[in-house]
Length: 337
Length: 232
Image 1 (tube, each protein chain N blue to C red):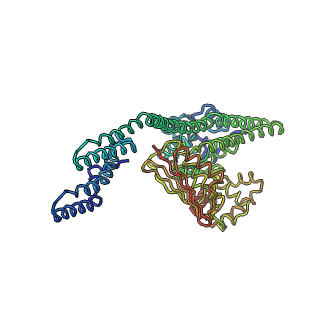
Image 2 (image 1 turned 90 degrees about the vertical axis):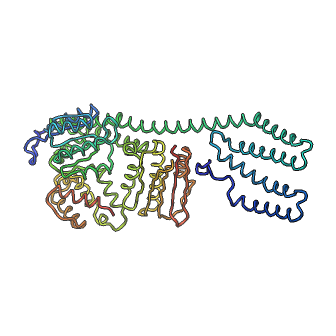
Image 3 (image 1 turned 180 degrees about the vertical axis):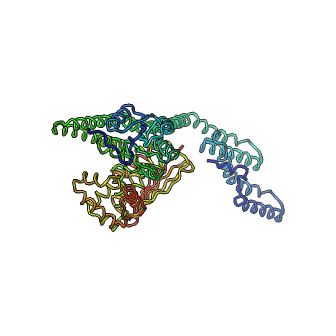
């Protein structure tokens, strides 16, 4: 990508153009001192100038605005143009006889034409396809994240709430019957029913937490990971300041990376220091979980593979560094645009 | 049910407002509390509603849900803390379908008056729940056992050799019940032991953890919670 700050700078720096210029001047002096006959330094100048022109052409292309730049193709066209000019120069320097440069120019133009007719349409199709896939995949991932949160909300407001109401009604019935001196066996039945309802509520809560932890939906990634660290004891430290909430899909992925990595660290090295860091800058969301445990984690293990897939589905980058005896560091970086 | 016992700290019936957006639960709570001699003076469905009815009725206690309209995130916690900053004597009992340690910290830090934070399904254990409502209204504490056990677990995980490891299993159970805000009598009932045995456990715990002995239930809870929440 052309960096904006490049614009306005010379295409060739002094380091690139200095030595050839000095050499050209030296040759001119030698030519003058040796009697100023046939002006041979022009051939040396031409030899020195050609590579410099090619480099300059390629740099010029790189600085073009994105809309006018087709990458490699534009570079090739620019180099062809330089070569045609070079042919014309050779033709002039060698006495300007029969205008042969027309033939190499014709060949170059034909090559470009062939590319335009046969290669370009296919390339164009692929570009369109890649754009489309990138867009639709991002769409699917966003929809999926939103859907998971909706399921969690629906469970919360639907089945869970109804079960709570049910268990409350059973509890009230139990109290009323107990007050009227009911048969203990009848009361025991109600107690069992209430316990069943409570167990169902508890199972639904665990299920909802696994789908999308409530605090993540309610307060965002930073609060959720903070809460994760707080719940894991004083050896787990969290560092991270997010100025705004990333999209749900990224929040989910980053949260599960932190949660899974933390669970692993505590499982394999109880009591060890763990540092969780989250950052969000330059359109990237990063999570790093580093522990001082024994290391030697298997990056191909099912837990880590699952995380890698989750991160890669978002075009992210996932890395596990776990040398034996050197602790384990898990990093995930997710593009947030 | 026997006639509603009158709390000695509140010669008049406890006056409560309820904020819950789910109609079935709201009606159920109103019925349950009324049946147990607790006076539900108003109900609302969202955060602004809570502030309005607290201002209008000056209740002893506000019982509220965490997720409320319009965003269904944590406005219940925010509204409850706001209501208390306007009326510092207001006791809060937050009921939720999940417990989040961060929310319990915020509630405990929000003032001196009574605080409760419990899972909604605890409502079905009617007698325990009504006890908790009265306790919180009287300035006490009622934390869900899930909140307490996560605090204890956290303390416990701090590594080997922490003072909490020196407690016997029975003493740790007692510690958790104290942190939930239970009275000695309630602890004795729960553990099916005599009142004397509970008192002995408690004096052992306070000795081992080097906490100042106190007869005041509320201060005792605060001492235990402060111990559990202290970092390291």
